[in-house]
Length: 387
Image (cartoon, rainbow, N blue to C red; front, top):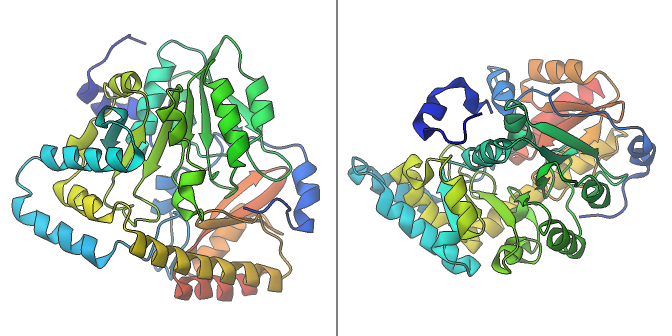
């Protein structure tokens, strides 16, 4: 691969790829002890799953979106932005960077924004694939960055999860060697919804970042009770070789508006900006909405409470039907199935419910995104016909 490339040429080419609880329910213990099966390269992409969803859908529970947002204030800001949307949004993008930097206690040079976090994950995949080497990740975990790197002929080292379905930090650290280009962690993890112990992650990050860059995808961190106590942005502030990704696509309700950012050392930001479009890739209405939404604690609290209520309803539904599940720290829940996963997805789709399936630990699993209560009730009605 060439050591440099034109960003627009890359985007036009086909190479930019498609892209809480410590104790588990008793029924999951034996499954966790089983030899894991790799999840990378075997699952549908998010886009493929969405395009294949049922046309007459009652419950869209396959994309980990926030169906309660964005807020009315955000919608108003977006509408007002339309009158000047003929102008390039550079000024507003700079304002958003400054707002994020001020809140996080870093300089604007530590921030890079883009149209969602996916372009930033792919930018990292491009950069860390340029010189060969390997990327270490969990299995199963979020696939965007590893899959992008894999398509660029980068070696992906998959490390099975622990018996609690969490990323295995000890095992991942042991995989670091002279060939390692990047350590990639998704915390809370997708698709299992588990979160790492903050103290252990901080110690891990401090040690490992001295050897290789550590990329931490915090897409779901806003669903935790105290995100600031768990985020690894503090590691960036300490000067560590750490990249933290955030997105407005989840709790903020911006999945269709596309706003995301990374926080990293200024030199890293300069490098990754070569492979990302940056703030100019985000529409003016999306940026104006993000400026209003960012750290709107009242809205975030309300959306979180609704999510938790729907999640508890799902827990209760699964228990009532005799199913176990992995306790989740995000807006989705994974549980082991008692039938073929593909067939289960198809049967639920016929009943107007979109969900996702995985296969690992020699077991078929379902991941249900948390929706509105009416969507969760639609899931329950369909599920009871199959359970």
